[in-house]
Length: 240
Image (tube, rainbow, N blue to C red; front, side, top):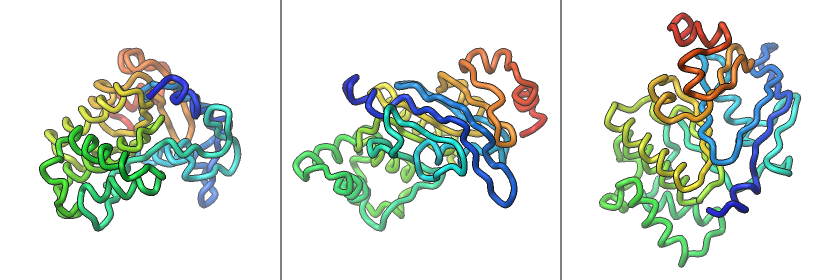
């Protein structure tokens, strides 16, 4: 992925983002910039608005107030991908899931074949390429979801707690894949409940409390000395 490609839909700039559901402000005046090639982790207690913010940044949900810009555009760019907590897989083979995503993206068959092979190899699923996706283990399904996303060569990859239901070995495998995707030039935006995971992978931490950003900081600084009382309470285990 070249520099010109990376810059096209970045940075992502959220200004005054507000979402109201049932009279409650799920997101309340969010101001946030996601820089190219960064690894931004969104942390916060249950109900803080992490998943909602991720979907707004990805363009899946339009805010009730405020704007999101992707680079110079206000229209959601196509060159980004999202992986959810539970892999959303089709009733096809592992390889078929990746092929379908590439077909929807308009990738030529001749190029798609190589992309499918490369993507499955990167996540260690070559040997089960022809197995039905929905009979794979949870860890294998999440690795397949990452293969499908990475085959699109996205500028930005959004991940919504992708290891929440996985055991430690599967979690480590997913973390390794995410790190490899980032190393290839993809910007990562991820939510997680795992503080250890954020410590291992994040460059920047965005901390949400009741729909508001109370702190944005370098990950090392955040975990060493969070500035906001809400973040300090969270790290101390008072608001998990």
